[in-house]
Length: 377
Image (cartoon, rainbow, N blue to C red; front, side):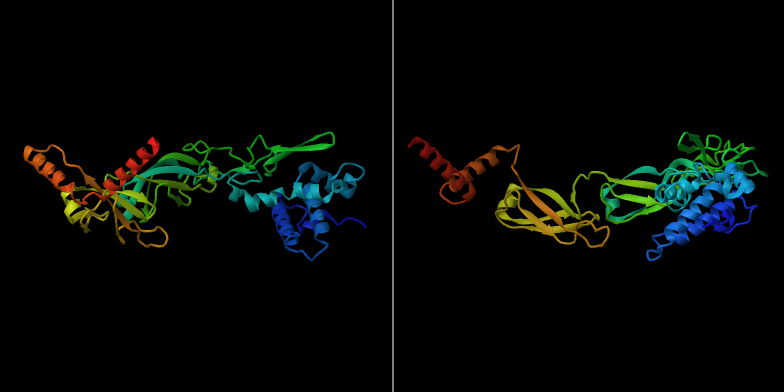
């Protein structure tokens, strides 16, 4: 069966440009790709035919030979038709893969595409109170921005980038070494497929300039230490008009003098006097919103006793629900006693010997006595 004309296969005229060839090939490969037509057994043959036609016509030397001699120019030698489907598909489908996934993967693989700008990181420290309420903040980011003089093209005003003569706009060049064909990035255009003959004086042809930018955004209530906020398109500008990267703001919450955070809950260690712990009473404790909360201390409170204040913690970042605050009591032993205070304490100690005022202490030392007696037996 005779082969179809390569121009007819791609549906283009004989004078079609490289960009027209590429556009037609890309459209047809997507249309006949096996993944989109799982029930069509002819897809593999169609893809192979498209790959063979595009592989010849996109190469200036092969195209010239084909225009002069037709299919006979490649018969009897290692032409595009002599390769199996798997290898042929991998090689020729590269351009379509670049268009579908190149930008997503954040890298440039030739074919005339402009490279995406790098992602940037900014570290922002906020207080616990700001994490509680959220805040509108403004930051200053040193970065690269699109050159306004050339609108990111890299070319001087009145001119524009031209198709690279070395690779004909493909961005890659091939070299034959024995049975192998080696493909590499075009050294003349760096893989972009275009060259700038008159570079912009403001950016020296890069299409971007160094500049400090001022950005405003909202830090939502409930952010935790290590929270990452993504600002789309606010990273480094792409090279020669390429898409900008993203800016990632990493939040760190500074330690607080009074509160310790555990997710949405807060903990506060509150010292209370010996008499308050023994007799009971009421204390006022601070809350993270700047208010006050009253806590009733029962008679005989010990160190480590916790009290839970519902709804006095931090808000959840996603649900908006509010956590709790836990008050941990620390019974403080009095210091700097006067003689009268010492006498009163001694009097208290004498009277306490006949009463069960310290049950935990009495139980502990009773266990100690049993332990020592057991060692003597």
